[in-house]
Length: 475
Image (tube, rainbow, N blue to C red; front, side, top):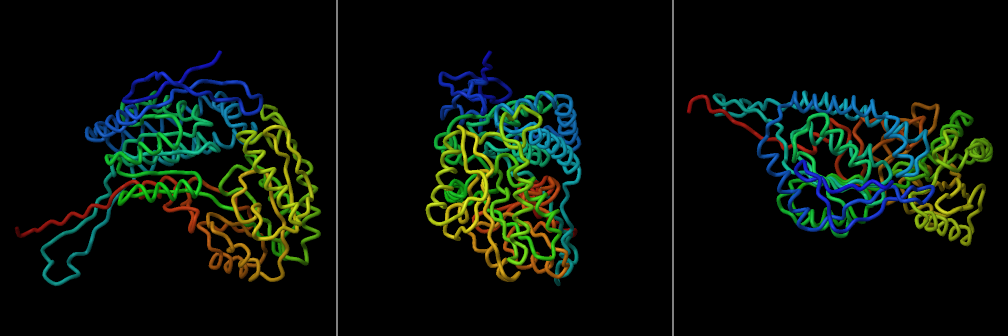
């Protein structure tokens, strides 16, 4: 039986005339129908969030307890939430289990950070004439935050926006991706059960071209946090005016394998993580750069590992690679592969498609201008390219409009430190893939990969203002 999800505004569930379906990404069956917001609903959601912020009834310790309780509820409902992710997103059971573990960690980390928000003393006495003054800066919440989340990690990335916002004392209007909104409803239900008062989080669902535009037009929103494409991120930045934004955008992650690396270990790790979440991750392995002297040996090891991956029904615990988010996206990625092959690239493995299932695909003899190299493929497609010197590898890696994360495998401390200094990326992962993310670390890119940082502590800094206070002791 289909479940219907209304909007969630000011602690109330609001049905709408129009709805849209959410599909099981493997079977194509309708899982649920979700309310489609109108402009008045968005206005009401912002009004509710603004009123909740003005009340400011939650202390830091209370916010911390709500988030900690939410983590416990997620743990209790873990099996149910994992199954839901498998169906709604098309994740494998393995990938869904990993996402739930990170959701729990992010809630707990945010709960701890809620109690640690602090300002700093400012040494006003360092300047003549200010000896009788004391200065300190406080971190204060910004207000209403609009959070716009993507389809690929709908529970985790929503948590990465909501939990720090709540920890910091903000209120939120959330617009989840239309492909995968159910996880956001589940998370808000959990936060409500954990004791979050009405109005602190509100959900409005619908297309980005409508709901997103209505959110951008509302001057009462203090900040926007968005994860998605560089194109949409640029539009948000242009439309937000002087209001701050945090943008986590795309990448075409390079992963360098130097000749001094443990090739067998590097091949196994890269193969295991190349097609995680069907390649639909901002930091997914996309470009593999291998020093020419070991390229043939590495490629053989890598392909042997890739060929062991199982593709198919994501509900089967043995499956390693499930469907993409839609057949349309799989067709788009398949077209990019064919375009590269027609232009001279060579197919080493994969390439076939069955509906939304695109099999792991490995290409070589590609050129920098091919879409599979220069754009974000966001699919289970990787390229292997040889290089001569480490300087050439850095140049190839940096020849990108993006700069989120890069990986490098080497046994040389010197090469590792060169990579840390020369790779133009927000994160440089040494002896692991670009896909590595620990939820405690600052996460964000440079160039077209975005602005600002995620990770609870760093997101809270983005979501608060520094307010200067000066005491004149002889007034």
